[in-house]
Length: 196
Image (tube, rainbow, N blue to C red; front, side):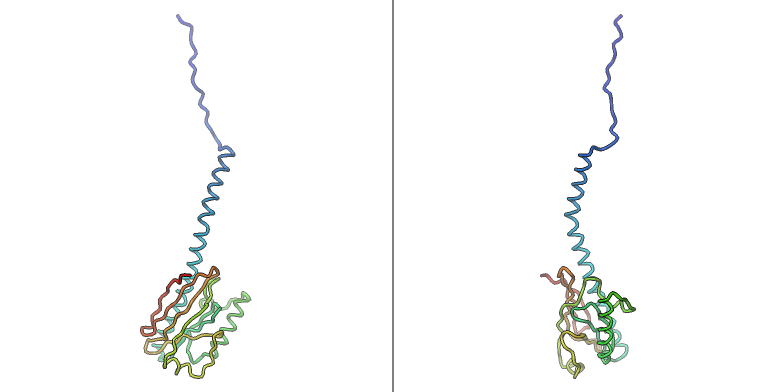
């Protein structure tokens, strides 16, 4: 009989942890992917705020149109160029709206909030420019109103459902722009992204 031979079996070891090199490699890959994705995410969020601000302003225009039809009086959406405040009201209250606008913008600049926050563009968004048509009806309505480029600007809405033709530009901190275009004949507004 042959002596008993030992059968050699390979020893199986189980690994319970990662090596430091493996962890550093995985961490490096995660950081690289995050650094590539972060600018796209921030840009998308910034554009979302800009779109949200334009939508708020469009809603205010719709409210002004409805109120003009309901009351039979000329209504306006008042906004501050280079500011972030706007409001809907009777055009005949231009002086009152100018006072409210100055007060609200001052409070917002000092981070004091009042009940008019729904009439404020999202943080980092501001009105930068606007073109308002001046037809005979708007000239008659504006009359002797003293409106300069840096003060409160009214966009007029008439009782028959029409409005002034207007294009109002909004800009974010990264200088992305959108335009809110108001078609006077129908009183409807739309938002258009403006390429640099």
